Amino acid sequence: MKKQSFYKTASHLILILTLTLFISSCSEDDKINNTPEHFEAEGTLFLDGSRAPYLQIFRGTVDPVFKTRFTAPLNNISDAFIVKFLSAEKKELNPPTSSDIKLTWKIDDASLVEVYQHEGEEGGYEFHLRGKKTGATFIEFYLTHGDHSDYRSGKIPVEVQRDSTTIENPTILFNNEETEEELASEKSDGTVMGELNVIAGETTDHIEIEFMNEDGTKPKLDASIFSISVTSSDTTVATIIKPSDDEPFAFNIKGNKAGTAKITVVLHRFIEGKMIDLVTFSAVPIMVK
Image (cartoon, rainbow, N blue to C red; front, top):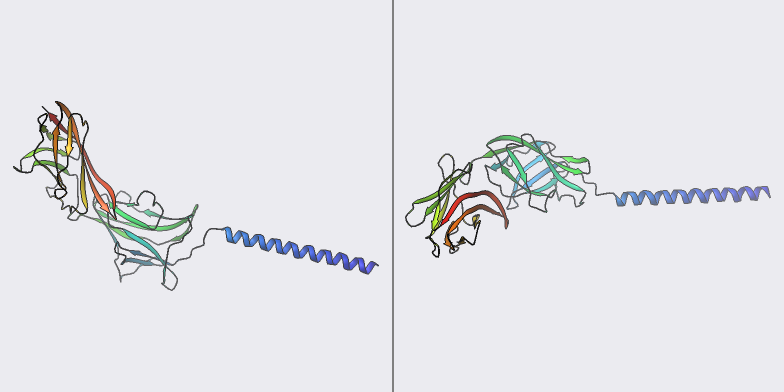
């Protein structure tokens, strides 16, 4: 009798132990399945806007086969850089899909350059560089998961350069398109020379806009990439009329009634179908007589 009782007790203990191990195992499985994706990489591959390899860094060393630094245009925005990763065998890896993991970065001298991402794409794996002033510094990218990093790229050189599109402390010029006479201008510090005049009930000839840098050079702004928007601060006094599409940097002013208004001009750049504001001028007066 005692022997049967012993076997029954032992059986119960074995059953309880088995159930405990099973429940524990299931709990651990659930814990693993519910954790965010664990992503392992040994390097980063950056593609340019055409999806061609641009720069590669592996285990903290920039590969000399590709570009050895990022370049950013002064007071402008670079084309897109697309981020991929590299395995230990240098095989290309797509970025992690977990929304808990974000692309972040640290710039040694943030006064020189900044990373720009379109609204709604922050933390994603595509970015642009915006140059603030000429010079060189370093940037390092991270895969940030919560309050810690799962991966760091190592430091990559980045240089801000002037190019043909550079806009540096510019003056905006308003010229009569036919006579080429300068009608008014505004410096980047808000200093205004002249005014735009129109008679009530009439419309001006075409007014052409130009930008001139502090050193006297004029940036080359391709109309397929750059555009302007022109608005009046008081449309009851003056209305802006845009001419045909083949004159993207020109406009007319229609005088509606005697009074004063101010004209606002914003220079935009299109990148991948998205418009980014680069420079704004808003102090030149419109005089309607």
